[in-house]
Image (cartoon, rainbow, N blue to C red; front, side, top):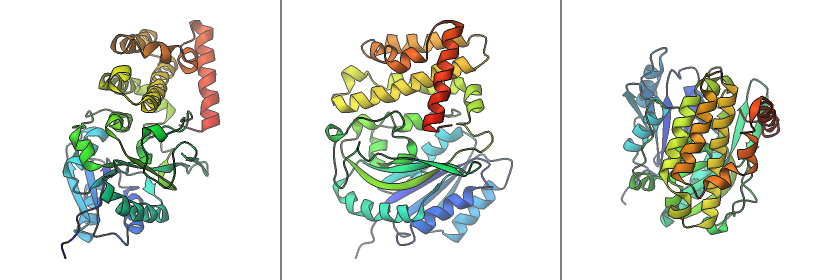
Length: 346
């Protein structure tokens, strides 16, 4: 009997991740214990220079040579590490698991059982819930898609409901068919934070078949000092947020390039969130030209996609994030902090 190929490749980008990468790798191995011949874990050491990440990656490869590969590269940032993982993946499906996060072991076992069955249909995307793990607070918040996505069957965008503000399909929620990402030549920019937004936005018009599994698979650690989604860090790196948002704006003209109305609605929803984030964090920053940059990103959207601009800028979030004057700025930030408290992000 011919040996079956790898079902899924897990890419684990690592940068000075020695303190927490073992938990990540162990969670994948334990959850895949009945599928070790069908999975691979690609540990990408992205130029770590402050700890023994490289040695740990090599040790994992030595322990599980048929399952784990360690790849070492010069530092290129999270996006370049994902690119390397994708370039080296041999699995039919592809999932990114950041080194400071982990997967629920029981949920992973269920996901692999279902994915093995779905692979015969060339499913484009498997979606699962994910959990914000705020370990320093002893709290967790689960992002669920029940009620928005059909359950128990393969579906298309026409079957999708309305996403709530907290229900965006982040990288943590998705498993892509590997060849789909290669067919669209997905390449994330190097030395840029927040590229996971590109990863879950740009491929979607090419996704035709989806399946939602109502399990809490991905555990997203929130609270590590210096983490890219820490508010102070996001303010400091607002230029990266602007760069990513421009790439997403350039990806397609939403009215002309996206035929499916429900998918277009979701992409507008997601882009609205990105534009709002840019506005809010520019208003939080102390950059002398912050207001000019805020006007510039909106002008960029208007020039590239004038038919979508009024819907985004004239919506509740677009108006609320851009209220004029000092009083308007204060009201915008108050609204942001209220939303952060309600939805428990950052």
